Every structure is written in structure tokens, then in C-alpha cells.
Image (cartoon, rainbow, N blue to C red):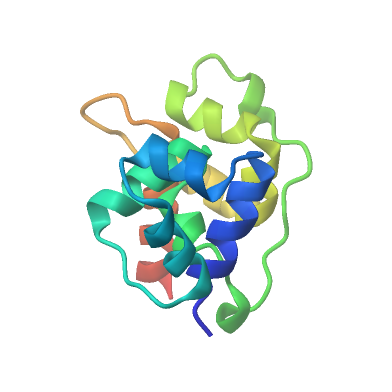
Length: 141
């Protein structure tokens, strides 16, 4: 089952946008959005990124990379001290403060520690840390 159409429709409705409004925000036509939601049309990475930005979600969420059914369930950290740690990188702090995304990703304590321990050469956004998390999960299998 392709999760993208379902996630797209739910995110659009959660953002209280019509298909026409989303199409306008992403410079696509309403028919294309409709076909995406029905699973009848593919989407380019460029359009996927535009849609995610317009809906305030990550590309990873839209395409279902945050689903961990095949790997077993992860425990969510209910209140992470990282959210208030001013020494933590801004992007990671933003992720920690996004309770809905944290719940959807089911980030474990070990994963928080791994993300916080990575020394990066430049500032990374919240979406960048989501991509790092996905990479960590893929590598640690």
C-alpha cells in the first residue's frame, strides 16, 4: 500500500487547505493534487519538497519513512531534556520542541543521544535532523 496519497490528504486537511489552495501554493494544478491523493500519479522530488513545505511537514513524513512497523516499535521519549538545552544545535532543539513530529517518529532515548552527539560542520535544520535520524536507523538496521 502506498502511504503517500493518504499522508498527503491528511496533511492537507490538517492544514485546512483545499486541493485548489494547495495547488496554488505549490504552482501545480488542482487536478494533479487530486490524482496524487488518489494514488494515480507520481510526484517529482521538487514537487514533493514544495508540497511538504506548503503543508508544514517533512518529505519523510509524506512518503512514510517514519513508519517503523517492520523494525518493531520504538519507545517515544515523553519529555526530552533536549528541548530546553541551549547548548544543543538549533535544528535539533526545533525537532525536540515539535511534539507531534517526535510522536510520529517515535524517537528513542538512544537516538536522541546519537543525534546530539554528531558534530556537524554547519547548522542543520529540523528536517536535516529528521534525515539524519532516518540514516541512523537505516545504518543500524
